[in-house]
Image 1: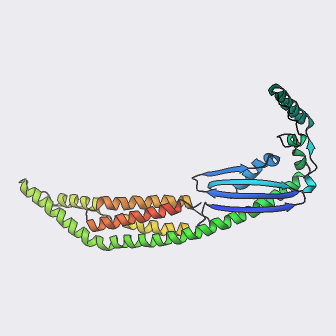
Image 2: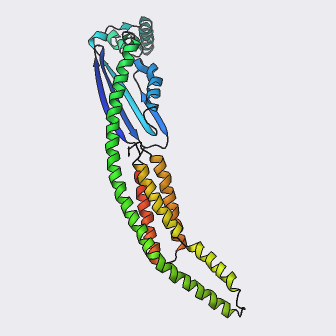
Image 3: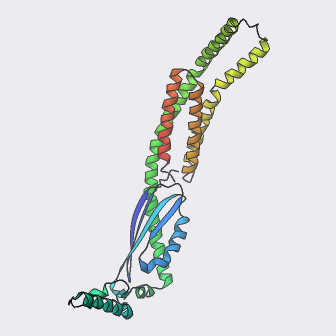
Length: 296
């Protein structure tokens, strides 16, 4: 399954005491990170949100924002008289020192931080009722968030499938051409060694030892094993992509192995045609890698 790390959802829930809204957004990240922005009335619930979200996804940077629009039933709040008096006294003192004669409006003072005891609102809602509401809101928000991530994952899956098919064609072409090129390269190498021996007037080497050394050299530039491993990696990539869960990290490791095999092929082979095919294969692997960076 392909699930993108990128997603967004916005969900609202109405209660007698007000309307609560949850916005969720996520972007790519190597690890799991959660940022929660809550109104001060719900500040104590931040660990609860972190605990719930950590169990719902594996990696990515998630930003969560909760807002509350309190209803008429919760408007019966208290005024912190001590804070209000302190504001009034300080403002009056500054006004006297500056010679300002403006009258102080209590209506303006009410809007200053700490004057309205908003904690009275949250105390009107029982903890179990608030938790039930937040759970319903979070479940709905996560469901919509996951829907968007799965949709984006399907788009990524389609793009990756095309790149995998192209990569298979490149590997097949290298595999098809390699036997003839291998024989030509081996014959050329043998001829060069013989010419070098003749030019140096060296006695003919032991035939069995010479054959062993030639086999050893041939194995060092033979890419048959790399081709076979590439076929295996592509099959494993598909199998992993079809697993019940999104395996972005595992797919990333497989792509690293693919890249290593193609680099080895490119370094071993001197034939220009195969080297260019290997370059195309490497470019295709890079496109796959860019896509899977978005997967959870």
